[in-house]
Image (cartoon, rainbow, N blue to C red; front, side, top):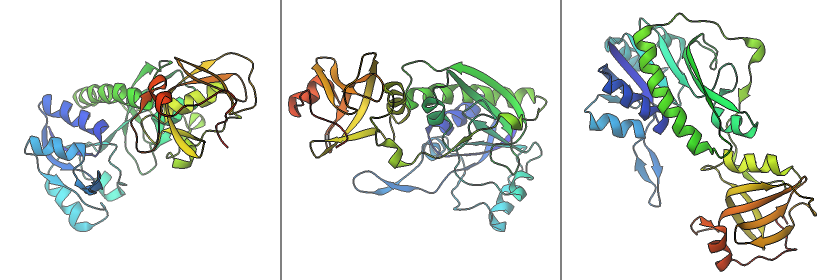
Length: 305
């Protein structure tokens, strides 16, 4: 079967690798234009582009798919289906209609829950106990098309956005191969159960210590590795990579209650939170003991001032 693949980050590269390994003929790879990255801000290829180059696949990096010239290229590719995974561009109706089997999306949630840009982070923030992958037949809406396949996985108590991403990327890669082989009957989504996963904003990383410790701990995990939860203390913004809830009566929110080898215990609106892995501006992320050796803190000092 001839396939057009559209995707950009590591999540999508896992699916492309699985399709290649399964023997599908990838006639064209669509990915976002190279973006400046690193200290030198040099243009950097996406994970999908890097994989496609390694397999000598034809690559197209349009800024939009609304161009008639681009749509003509897609038409000439003669693909039976287009597989889409975290691509980053809107597919107009004209593109959706090109492949005979349409465009098939790999979405990192149990649709219709968490439609949109940040389903992994929103599931963690909400305290969901499970998530999964949905293979969906694309329509003009935002993740609103009929479901082809769906598989659930548990969200572990220690899962971060990164670890959950990696699990879902592997699951999505397996499910898309299965969906193409089985061509399952689509079933409509239940609109009454739909929720929206809004894109993560950097401002959400700022911790409000008046929130319960359980809520803040979920925020730490949801924003690891980006944008990373943070709070100010001693005129310094400290990034918080790891945290654990401590069930105990709290002092004023943000106040340091205890310093111990395991970390820094901070009072929250309810209970306390051990900060176990931290990072100073320009420094490396460190276990709390190593961090405190270079940035001493004491009980009574306060985060969030």
